[in-house]
Length: 469
Image (spheres, rainbow, N blue to C red):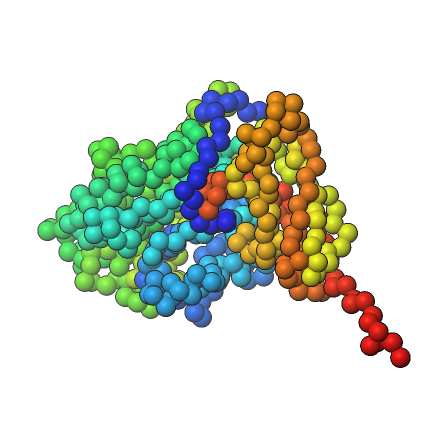
């Protein structure tokens, strides 16, 4: 459905040099944290997200939260649990953000790497062509303890790619980190025309435990680095940063930008404290970088502004400190965007077939696995469907249609779809229908229609002769 991969993928045509006119600004808040297999027990994540404890006290809210975690506990028992429920970290973030009317758009996990995207509800119908990818780089590419997971999507008329990476560890493994980066760039392929690779996108955000260390392993001890941090000599230290050096040399991450960290190194700390663990040389392993293809379109210039970049030293359950950054993007509206509209549902009868009607607008491009899901009103995740039916797309019947019939199907038309009597919905709640344009499991998916809420009831059984005195 909305989260698994398909062998059938369909490419939709989004020209690389189309024209846009009206635009808006959207804010994205990015979090990266190596959680060192710890669980989010007895900690508050509000400050990490830049939020107050009560939603009423929040001064401003971003349009999107992007949460990238590394070393999430991926023991077999937890992996089995996650097949049926959100992992504990995703659930913790969701509990906070649902109070502020955010919805989980997508979550992608590869062993300990976890990436989640939350969006304000008002944006849901404008997030199209969502697709995920992953790349294993551990043990030469056969193990997923290192590598990257990514989510790409269109936000209104602009494309964005989000990459959460965990690269090779240890001071002396610089070449392996560079090789990991190259492998991720080469292997991650998407199925949206003109946006097949990471750097084809309008905006790229690459973050994670990138594991770059400080040069001078033989000449600078952990104690000396700690002393420089204590003297606030961060500018001198950052000049020894491997990531900065390989970017300057054009060996890796050269297409990305970064505001140089003005916070102390985020690794390695004694668990439960703010004291560096002197078994390792402190380093800025946890980073957030970005790129913008300013001239992807003929008549507009794309821009991104990084408005914050900081670590959060008060969080001490891990040997890493979390890092966050907020960005403001210029996003253009896609005038070709089409939306499915549902006709009102007066009442849904539980235990009986229910037929719904929806209107497909002219120019809407049905995919080969479109489906309609039933959700509770005010759902908090696009994975929370209670039941679904695939639509009867005309593409499966094209060979049976003549030219006149094909032309009719290109026009605005009303379609009926019947849900089985086996769909069981609890009474006393309200529900909504969501239409997903989809190329299949783990394919390219987007929400393109939301119905008004409707109630359900169970028809009283007809009286029998035994009921009559």
